[in-house]
Length: 387
Ligand SMILES: C[S@@+](CC[C@H](N)C(=O)[O-])C[C@H]1O[C@@H](n2cnc3c(N)ncnc32)[C@H](O)[C@@H]1O
Image 1 (spheres, protein in one colour):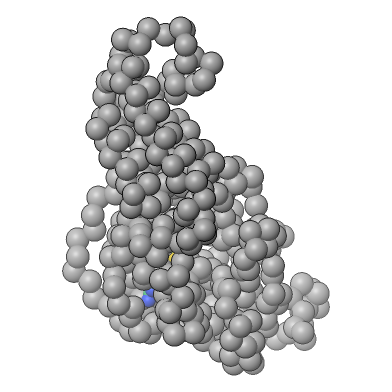
Image 2: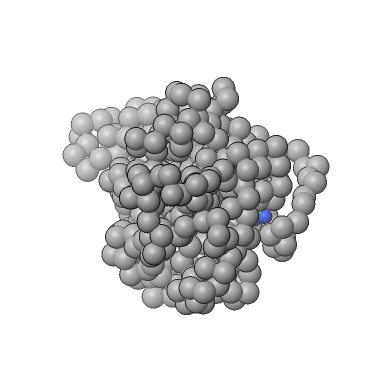
């Protein structure tokens, strides 16, 4: 896990629900909605607006007071951000919004600059007031204010309707890195990222596969996610055959590659429906429900993915799915959903240190499909030993 994401990503969390009901995991979807155009992240917009330094200072003092007034009230209420975290976010907002953020730094607070000088900003002053009001009063996630999230070595565009990628999901990329190292078949194969959201996993996996013949197909049921993931793929210049983004439910858009995939990764929705309202407001009120809600026990989608893995992957294929609930609900459910004659489950209890520090738990269901003739492949057994 890269530390770059720890600064901005770990400390803040996560939109306006765009889907209020969850679909049946296996259902086929035909969607006619035209994809919205994703917004350019604030830091990448031209500094086309001006305000005087004194106007900006006034905004900054107001925003700091707003953050300070929160104290620990959100933390006490629902584990939300406290004042120190909000103040840190305010600094990040200044960094993203101002062409020269240093004009607001404490060292320059007194006489270095004339208060009447014009300062170039990437959003108008009115919008800066509006955004910070939304952060404090509506608990709108910081990442939606600035339109991006730092994740691993990527800066991904995000907006309402798309899950803000979480640091704990980065572990899946490391697992893929391990799996393809020294395994050219996996590296040069077709991979799929199911429920791609912002495209985080698909883009990171494509970068790990490199410029050989390996490629990634990213799928999502949400047209907003498909639009944002496509935009991020374009921003990272991966569109030319390296990452294709498809709209549809789980395996539906992958019929043409059934049984031919080398790898499957996913961070599916896995929060039990009834737990969602109790999450911090940034998540429960603003993240898309479609990205969170794993059904009554949180396992609907995971089980669907586990069930399908064996038929979608070719022999010797690799899969890694993020989960957090299987322990609560019973390991047998997972085992039952993984095709026992075709798949090995590897380390099913992969603990993610970072999440543990935050006193939460994430597990990755990781496994592989058996080779056609395991007896002939001693190496395979050494790498992927069944329990
Ligand atoms: C927890 S989010 C993960 C997003 C992204 N992979 C990440 O880690 O940041 C789950 C994603 O699954 C998508 N999703 C939910 N139901 C789906 C379905 N039936 N088929 C495909 N994608 C689905 C959601 O739209 C959402 O983008």
